[in-house]
Length: 350
Image (tube, rainbow, N blue to C red; front, side, top):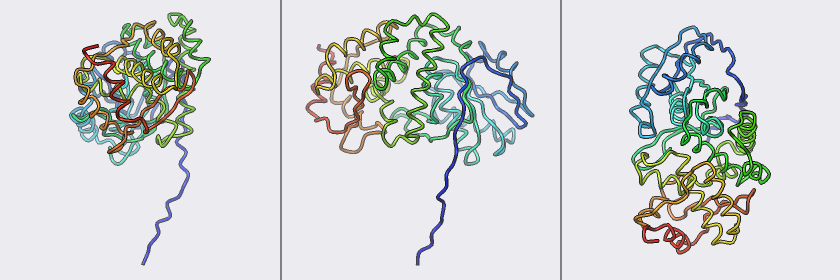
C-alpha cells in the first residue's frame, strides 16, 4: 500500500533590498532587535528612532565570530520564549554577518519558523551575508556547518552605518565585493581597479553592483545546488584558515582574500587563469590593505580540514576556481597531488 502526500507548490519568497537611508518602519506585532554591544553603542538609538512596534525588545549577544555558537542562539531563543513571541512575531538582525546569520537561524527554528528582516551594519554584511537567506552558526568542526536556508522579508542597506566602520572591517567587505567581480563580472572588476570608494556616490554604486550580482545568483539557485556555490570562491581555503586560527586571527573577509590567492594559484596551475590575471586580483586585494599570504604549518592537516567544507564529499573536495577574470569553474576533479603541490607553495618553509 502506498499513500501519497501531494505537497507540490510554489512558494514566493521574493523580497526587496533597499539601498538608501533607513525608512520609518511600523510593525503591528512583537519585535525583537538582535544586536551586539558594539553596534548597539554606535547605532541603536538611530534604529530605534526609525521603528515602532506593538512590543519592542532588545536582545544583545557578545560580539565576534567566536560567539557564533549554540550559546548565543540559546540566548536569543530564551528571550523569545520569555516574552512569549509567536509565529506572527518578527526578529530584526542589526549588525554584521555574525548577527545576521544567527538571527536568521534563530528565526528559522523558533516555533518552526518566524519572519525576520536584515539591517546590516558592515560592508561585508551589506553586500553579501544579508542577501540570500543563508543562516547558521559555527561549531568546533567548522564554520556554518549548522544552519538553514531562511529568507528575510526585507533587507535595508543604509550606507550611514559605514561611517563608523574601521579600515579592516571595510577591507573585509571589499574582499567579498572583489570575489563577486572576479567570478561574475569582468567590467565590474575593471571598474574596481580604478574606483575611489572613499567617494560616497562611488561606494553606493559599488554596493548596488555587488548586491545585484548576488541577488541574480540567488534567484537562479537559491539552495546552492549549482551556480550559487560559485559565490564561495576563496571560502574553501579561507574557512580552513579561520578554523586553524580559531576564528580570532583574521576577519572573515581577510581569510577569504587569502583564500582567493590560494584558489588563483590552483587556477593558474590548472590553466584556468593566467599569472597576469592572478597578479591583478592580488593587487586589487592589496589596494584595500587585505592580507594575501598565509603560512600553512601542516599541509596534511590543512588538506584534511577541507573535508569539513559543506560542498565537499567523503572522497572529493569541491573547489571554486576563477576562469580568467569574469568567469568561474566549480570542480571536484582536482587530483590530490595537485592540491598538495599548491598547498606546499604556502608552506612555512617557502
